[in-house]
Amino acid sequence: MALRAALRKNCALTGLFSQLSSSSRHGRVCASPVLVAQQRNSSTSQNIKLDFDQSTGVAVMHMQRPPVNALGLEFLTEICITVEKLEMDKSCRGLIITSSQPKVFSAGLDIVEMYETSPEHRGEFWRAVQEMWLKLYSSKLVTIAAINGSSPAAGCLVAMTCDYRIMADNPRFSIGLNETQLGLVAPFWLKDSMVNTVGHRLTELALQLGLLYNPSEALKIGLVDLVVPEDQVLSTAKKTITKWCAIPEYARQLSKLMVRKSTIDHMLTHREADIQNFVEFTSKDSTQKLLRTYLEMLKKRKA
Image 1 (cartoon, rainbow, N blue to C red):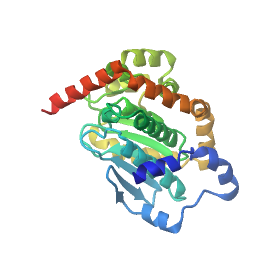
Image 2 (cartoon, rainbow, N blue to C red):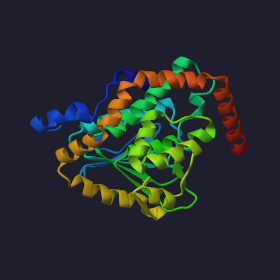
Image 3 (cartoon, one colour):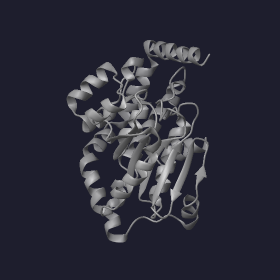
């Protein structure tokens, strides 16, 4: 409950908007000494292991919610709080997001949050999904997704918020927005993110058909930027982020905002309507039936 309260308290978008203008005049925003001390040590919460290297200014966020890093309300809130704290630390310049779970980056949203829950809960859950996207997509940090496993649906969402995506070269791994295969619809701001990444026509095909791509296919269409051997994903991400962090920081941040601002503004303008649409859509009997069928299928797989 404390995590949920924290998210509600911090719903205002942090990151580039409020800090870029002040950083040019006063330097970067500083955290309290206690907060900085906490962040300079490796830390572990229920769903996240965070390693921060002071010498490079790079943090590595290991998602570790067994078995598949399903993004539930508490997990989403932890991600938001972690990113917000890192941005407050003047010594942190970059964030790598990866997974501690074998063969999976993130399997997407936790369906349990949407099935037979109250409209109020589903609204709170969707606001957390939005907030996670906003925090990462607008982050002033350099962000790299080290995709060391499959990344469907909202797993792909997490990856697409990042500045650069590196995926393991394993043909069994896949990435993409396959929501329609489950009877769901990607929100407009996620559609916009994919258009920005792979273009309009490929997005149209991918969303309607719920396509998943193997690493080589994802590289070909630009959904990921680099494919490397499975055991080199994290090390390559660390080498790559060093190059990004060598770029003058303020110029890079402004360039990022220039490219992403219209997408962010569009989302913020229609945020409340998007929540309402999600609640109404997931309240439909047909949607709940599809969610039940999917959950039953997952139970059979586990059995």
